[in-house]
Image (cartoon, rainbow over all chains, first blue to last red):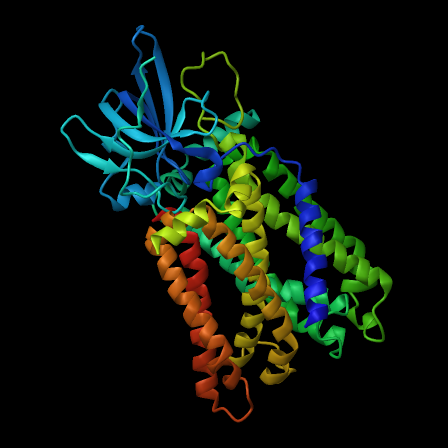
Length: 153
Length: 181
Length: 153
């Protein structure tokens, strides 16, 4: 058994070497905590500019208008198509031009106009939870609305 | 026809759209891909570990080899088939993914490895029955490293930049022609 | 319970994994290699019990020869699994696919160290051995499937 552990250690070392020599630059996601900031809740109020309904993540592009009139497009990550389908949504639930409110958590790099979505609220008041509980976000039940920063300027 | 137009054509096919935008096909294909690794990867690992003398050293190598072989082949076929379908779903993003190319390079090396060691080892497993040659041990070590690399690079694909959404606000002349949508 | 999970999310190792974006997928890759080792070797025995291959050895011999590697693989799983769980403990806890996976995993492990051990003995009627093998394969398949679906539920 002890020798088996040594052999496993050697084998793992080989794997790590293999991984290190795989020089792919990794720039994003998975494990919520490594890409999004659980302490940076944001609120985005604007129009849907585009919906990317693709696996493994859906993306909603939301255009907000800031106080000085400048327009900014934020990219908001939602769950997989299957996740959203199970909640009764599909591609046509997100027509371009729809005024929405999205709450979520900003990317760790606060210069990025990107967030992980929790909820999207439609003009008729309907609320859809976009979060993918699998890749994690803070407690689904708690969202710090007081602390949430509405992107205005 | 350019590469880009070929990739775009693939993405326009019904099959591609069904997997890329559908609910269950994508995770099911991924699941079968992983299941094949789980159920048949053992025979691959066991074969190499036997060559290194670390597993079932008292059993004749050629015995083990011939018995493992059909399972390895079955696993390989399933992994490649599901992999091809997954690739068919998002060729544009894959084309722009460095990890994908590393994986393909490793895959090519697996083929080279099989050819290089066929004559001395894999084609005549009985030659190892009297005692494993050091060349066979080298072959086994390389094989383990290559397959481990395949798993790691495969996992890293979804993390590459080409899988990020492209910011819409960019002017159309900003060229991210490959690997974005 | 939730408090323990919240503590895990804030643990040193969780922070370590979340600090570099490539760490989580690396840990996850080791998880895959670990299950290729553990489930893979278990599958060899199961196929043998079902009469589908590896016929030159008796099931008990195969099982005994492979067991150290099965355990090494299980050890890798039981280290990489909780590490990944820690990074998003609360969210995983709420994820139905994760819960399904944990139930199946518990049953699979229990089965492996009890019924399965018994089933490889020569005095066991073939039908019982085959049932045990089928149950084992089914449970481990459910574990992998449950794991895959975490991000898609």
